[in-house]
Amino acid sequence: MTTAPRARVARRPVHGVLLLDKPLGWSSNDALQKVKWLMRAEKAGHTGTLDPLATGVLPLCFGAATKFSQLQLDADKEYEATALLGTKTSTGDAEGDVIAVRPVHVAAENIAEVVPLFTGPIRQTPPMHSALKKDGKALYEYARAGIEVEREARAVTIHKLEVALAPVDIAQAAITMIVKCSKGTYIRTLGEDIGEALGCGAHLTRLRRTATGNFTVSQCVTLEALEAMTEEERQACLLPVDALLERHTAVTLDAENAGRFLSGMRRRGSWPDEEMVAVYGTQPRALLGTAHVKAGELIPGRLLSPLEIAQSQTQQAWSQEPA
Image (cartoon, rainbow, N blue to C red; front, side):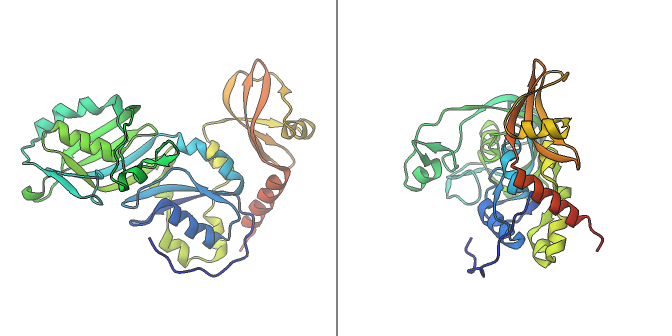
């Protein structure tokens, strides 16, 4: 998507997570850059790409939160999608060229028969039109050059799959899908594979991500709403950095141990073994970083810098001031 040149703005340190309802037609990076500009943020990143034709939950990480963005990349996702039956495209969605058209003879009982084939652990071959890299180049670069390369099928898990005939004109038979899946699942590919199992082929015409990890679309703000806000209102939309660490066990250290932990030193205590730990300091309570516990040792993982901690505390105090 092309956008007009933006006026230069004074950047500032911003720390936290903004849940964006990505609009239709925007790439994830375009949406990120627009919000980064609106927030005047120095550093930002998104947590997994949504195609331009997809909408929905796109967590944007600012400042210190970018250190933990991988947690959202690894999280389970939930989607709602529509696939048009009988037409296969080069990309698996409505952006591609039609490459095959077949008659559709699908009833509810046919759908009931194929759903179990795509529930639980399955293997998917990644589509050529994807950002996965081979020999340093994204697959979509090969696809645009008319080159098809061999892709290895990958193991993914479909935790929940609900498929139904869409209530549309019979000449445009379609299915709706509600999917909860593991990271790395391509819903375009899932729609295509279900279409093949139904004997007619299919391509995706609508895709909406409704959840990623603990974040749901009901928590999101739209780009249009953000543009209409004041800077203070945009700041109030930010979740704290540790919103990314909800599934982590919290450990709090006193001032002396907190300082040593931040310098990368292991701390010893009576903690049980734990793979995912969020570590806090006191006076005032502040996130220091992540760790894991093994044999009574708290072993540092990703750490915030003292500057990031101070800036986060200042930002939080400012946001809590009465209007």
